[in-house]
Length: 121
Image 1 (cartoon, rainbow, N blue to C red):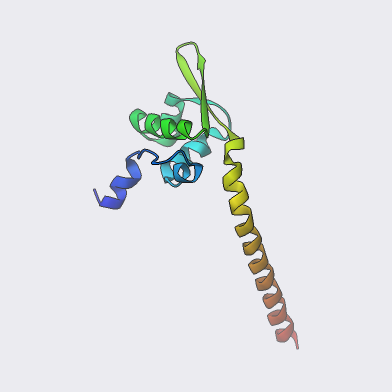
Image 2: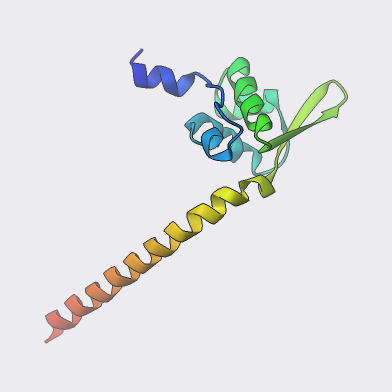
């Protein structure tokens, strides 16, 4: 197994209690994506994500440690759900980059219009 593939499949622990660090791992983002539709058990996440149960559990532990995921008991099962409010710092940080992208796309639109008008003349 190539080194890059190994690191994608192994759940790593968060070195800080930081939302940014927790979502830096692609597989943890997949767990968050799977939970966006509502709460799920570990077994449902295993099925949805084609990950092993230990991998899912490790990712859930990291996400829980930073408060992105919460758990509630339902009999013998544990149901996990997304804590959307904890994504606010990431959203706020990303918003400035979204504006920069929108500005660039607007400039591309303007440039394309100029090219089209030049072709018509």
